[in-house]
View 1 (cartoon, one colour):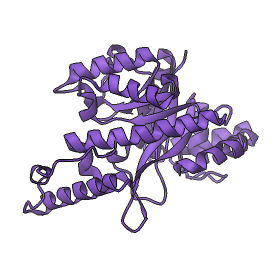
View 2 (cartoon, rainbow, N blue to C red):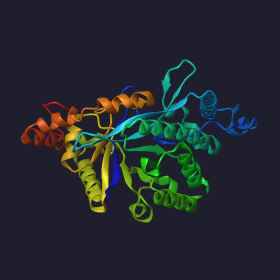
View 3 (spheres, rainbow, N blue to C red):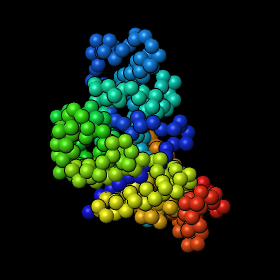
View 4 (spheres, rainbow, N blue to C red):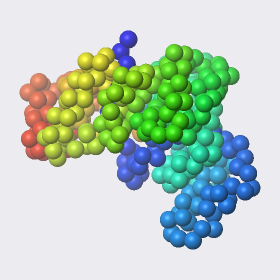
Length: 343
């Protein structure tokens, strides 16, 4: 059975450039941070960086306690058929004025061992409940990907807790995908991470390796861990119009996925030219603003029912072969595209 690789390309237009925090935990309802926590997280510390971190932690704790953290969902689209193949759950939170905010604004919370775990548990409960409701109403959503913090995976009981939460929600593990970054394989607790991933994979949860090709990327991880999905950093797609060598690296990663039986998913696609290039070079799925922004849970049923496979993919299919190759050639030669989907 073909596995999944995800190509990370871009994010919402109405937000600042996404930080790694948006791919961090989608985490659980504060089970109550003890009163002494304030001293531990540095509230009252002097210095701008310490104060900024403390402010982020305050915002995250308040949002959790007041139930203002929730998942938004962005569809993943098959680049061959145009159908929705799954979703990724992305953390969003509302400020005191009801404005939607992004994970970058509470980034420090995802590095805090207690707060990250609590946010993750909260997010999973909400996501699992949403998945159960959609399936109960006959809405086909594919797998829903959810991020997990390193602090959670390094907990020896994480896999059991994850599967128990799924069972309590009445959701099959085959409806979920777990996204992790390669940093979880490094340092303290790595042995717990390996056991957790193998247990979850055996139960039917798909495993996605995020940010592949950057940082601590190692091909050995594809061999030693049960990786079903690889997300290649979005910079490889965004830089197609700037550096021909980037296109060569991207093609090599797509070939690697095919040779290993791992499907490729380009995340954050924003232009028709990017979609055409990726489709032509064998990328299996796409995700990004070209298809849809991340949406709140109550809008997903309508999105699935109203989805038209023809959208941009049919526009691409309507192009002549010559036009398609002209678009691709323009990317590789660093020239602007005159047809639709100009870079």
